[in-house]
Image (cartoon, rainbow, N blue to C red; front, side, top):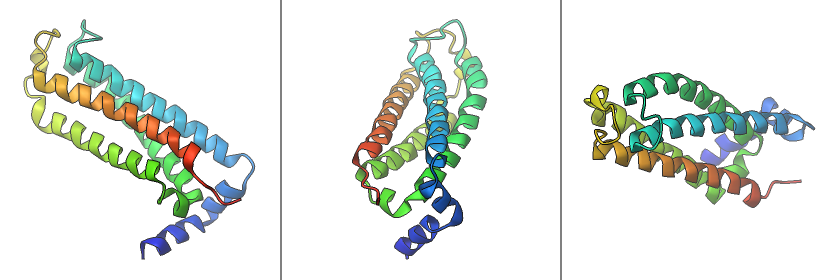
Length: 166
């Protein structure tokens, strides 16, 4: 059933156009890379603030409020462009170890972020200095930063390990 779904996706008109076209894949890949750069960069700003290593002149709440709209917009573009790239060779990408790890890490990063926003950021409006940022916030920031670096690394490895049909 799963294989049939992957094959149907790969056989779609848009996937075929991306796979067989001369320039569509590279353009979509450029959007994907630029969007991921904005996602990881904007998340890093917040993570480094949680760690007390950057933006110490602003509160965590101010930093979050200014960064998250960019993060979510860029994530939307990354998800759409990534989905389009995936569709072009869904049966191959779905079975690639590096792709699977990247997707698992994105899910873990999402759980880490949700845990922070739902449970661990109570009192964040009082975290004005690095010394006041509690250990739980520093841990979430450090874990997030490591996860997103790993996501970028595994994403890059996909391109070096994928065996696409010619």
